[in-house]
Image 1 (cartoon, rainbow over the protein chains, first blue to last red):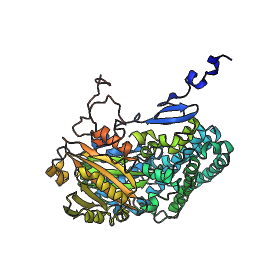
Image 2 (cartoon, chains in turn blue, purple):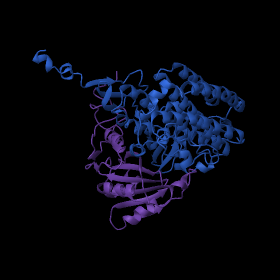
Image 3 (cartoon, rainbow over the protein chains, first blue to last red):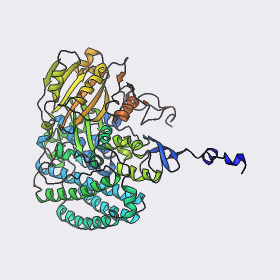
Image 4 (tube, helix red, strand yellow):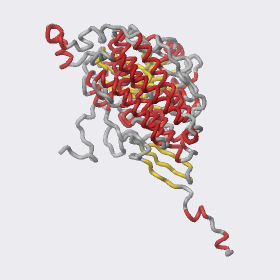
Length: 404
Length: 187
């Protein structure tokens, strides 16, 4: 052997020590437009930088230039998988600012609770189904897509839209529940329970799935809190923080439901927490539907909630309010308010400032996945490139919500 | 320092957020001149402090056993251009912007809002990334949208917009019809 061959260092000569690759913003495994700059050592991630903003639409600027009511369609497009939750969060913040939240009739509160939980179910179906798909389990994905379709059918029967519902209004709702609502939900739940069983059997004890999910993307409790994790990802670490339980709103202090928590904070625990939350949401809906009272669904104050069409056409005062609400917008007194709600992904809180006029002076939303996406680098560094996929899935970045 | 309270109302959870945090902060900073204003509106407790004292106040809020605000929920800014009368102290201080922090304590289950006014000619405030690492992206966003500079931030650059974007779009004097050079005029 010559000296030259003896000194030959494979790593040095072939320049394979570090490889920089660019993943996204349009990558099949990163649903949602996000870009990762990855520095790899073989298959291990040495450094990961996350770049977001590809779906920035100027949500706040839009809201500031429209009336309070006109912000609803924009809130739909934040976390579009659970649009109604954003509607409710925004409407309740405005109602808090106006000091009318306790005037909401009981049926209205029930409807909001039910619709929020349907949105949570749809969101978790999407998230878990897509995660399964990206880990190669196409069949499981199809099962949950079917379940989600059925939930969307219910949402469609209530408000006419499936995804971007635009259903909630300040001080009320766009429409009441349809007549056969209870029977429809019962029928859907029977099918969804079967689909859930199938999904559960296919994945939860599946060796391949477990290998990809367990001990990947782990984060400690302290770090999760540092980064501002909320929702299923924080509960997977073992912190029992759920706004529905900690600072109850709507009906949540009167209903019986469990808040599932994990222990390790890895991707598999996040998966388990979400799976259990689907069941708990069904439980909440069933209880609420059982005791659903009859009565009005809107606050009976024409300055808050648009009067009914019948009233507008027959009563002069109603028509005046209709005109004023349309032209000047609902008048919200001066002040500021923050109202936290439990979104599917974590704490969704609106911070609104009013200058006493018909437009929001400031309309800020706290996006839960924004806080969690910034921890991506921390969670994948040192792991295999393939581990980035389940971690990113379980963070559940929704472009519309993260980039606003 | 003046303190006025409005009737707590509105949200069903309004009273869950009330409690000792504000009283403890007022007691701690009595006669120090750190606190400019406090109020409780719709059950949300708010303390307004001088921007130069933000690190001191935040450290206290984070570390005091009675408060223990372990979570930085939200950070944003508001532009009060020509609307300084919305908050009386703004006009007195000639401040245009306000950085708004929302803190939450998991253990104590209480919240507080901290605000720090900033004058237009001195848009600097200390970064709180040393206390809550998660403030990183939130501060970048406030910088991106309002041009507020967070001193001591490890990587202060635009986050939602691109580097060649001109101006800060959430400022009230940024016209909503403005076009960016990279995008070109409307045809």
